[in-house]
Length: 342
Image 1 (cartoon, rainbow, N blue to C red):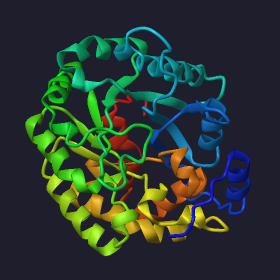
Image 2 (cartoon, rainbow, N blue to C red):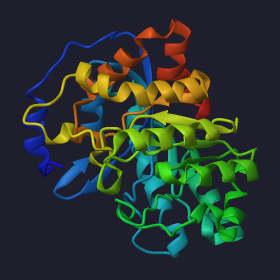
Image 3 (cartoon, one colour):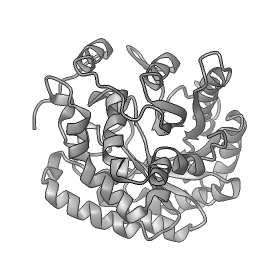
Image 4 (tube, rainbow, N blue to C red):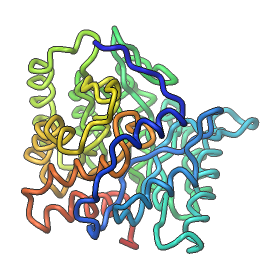
C-alpha cells in the first residue's frame, strides 16, 4: 500500500484546491447526517471551518454532530465529563440558529458519548446530556470497533465484544425510554454483533455508521473477499427493522481506496465509480427509508473536498427516483434524528 502523506490544514487546503468542480443539482436540500467538530492544536474544525464547507455550493440545510471526544469537562465526576461535548456543540448550534450566518442550521441533532457500561448508573449521565443539549440531544455513540490486527484505529480502543457485555446492555436499555437512538461504529467483521444487539432491543433505533466499515488495509486488502463478507453481513443486519445505515465514511484511509495518497485529488466521477457498489448494496438491502448520506467531515476531507464528496453521492443516486433521492439526502436523516425543521 502506498505511503499516506500527512498533510496539515494548509497543505490539505492547497491539495484540495487542485480540483474544483461545478456543483451537481445545487438546489437539492441536504441533511448531513454525520460530522464532527474539534479543537486539537494545531488542527481545528469548528464553526468557521464547518460553515465554509456547508456554504461551498450544496444546499445543506441541517447537520448532525456525532461524538469525537471534543471539549470534555476538565473536572467533576468522570462519567459526567463527556457532557462537556454536548455543552460545546449546543453552543455551536445556537450560533447557527441565531440566523446571523444565514438559514443553515448546523448541529440541529447531537449524538454524544455516555459510558453505557455504567449500567443503571448511566441514567443521570443521559439526563445531563438531554438537559445540556437544549432540545437537540438525539442519541449516544459508544464506539465498539475492534480488530485483533488493526486495533480500533481511533483515539481509544474498546474491548472486544463490547455490544454483548451485560453492563453495557443494562446501560443500553436506558436509551429507548428517553427516545434516544444508538450510533453503532463497528468493523464489517462485527456486523453480527450489531444484529444480536438489535434482536435483543428491537425498540431501540440503531444507526450503523460508515456503511459498516468494509476495511481495505492490513489483512483486508483482498477487496473481493471483504465485499462478499461485508455484503452478506449487511443483508443479515437489514432484517432487523430498527437498524438504519449511514452512507459515507469511505473517504477514510482504512477503507483502502487510496484517494488520500494521490498527487492530485480525484474527481467525483472517479470516487462515485469506486464507492457505488457499496452504497448501492446498502440501498438495495435496507431501502432508501433506512439509508442516509453523511459527510464524516473533517475525517473524509483527507480524500476530497466537501463539494466533491456530495457531487459523488449525487452521481451514485442519480438513478433513483425523486422521492428516493429526497429520502437519501434529507428525509431519512430528518426522521431518524427528529429534525422537524426540514
